[in-house]
Image (cartoon, rainbow, N blue to C red; front, side, top):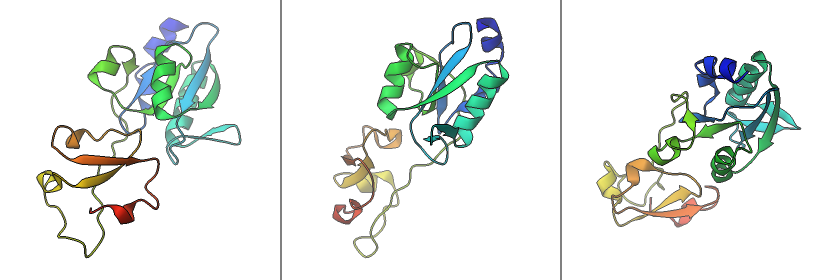
Length: 171
């Protein structure tokens, strides 16, 4: 079954979230646990059922390989730890980094999201480059990385969600 799973890996490319999918070979008989971060409409576990275009595609691909599939909702950071520890077979909606690629197999990106800057109207002129954000507090969601902002002197104020937090940000 492991050989069939690896041969079917190109089809599993359709599993990913915004940057890729982590794959961990499931033992025979094939019982696969899919880690789902609750990133609707891409991945979610709703009333115990796997939903969302990416999670459903992952489950469909694994079932086509003869696997019994279950979903497990976990926060993003725990997805990586559980795949690396062998507690999950597949994780959806994850980001590949050089460090993470040493510990798991990743598909090519399936869905790409673009990071955008939101600012309150009437506060200042909108930024036209990332350099315009240097020295400012920029709201960011806890648990997400923003690679275009790394090493640029931009201060990120991390919050669990965007709602209700934007009024205190200069941009």
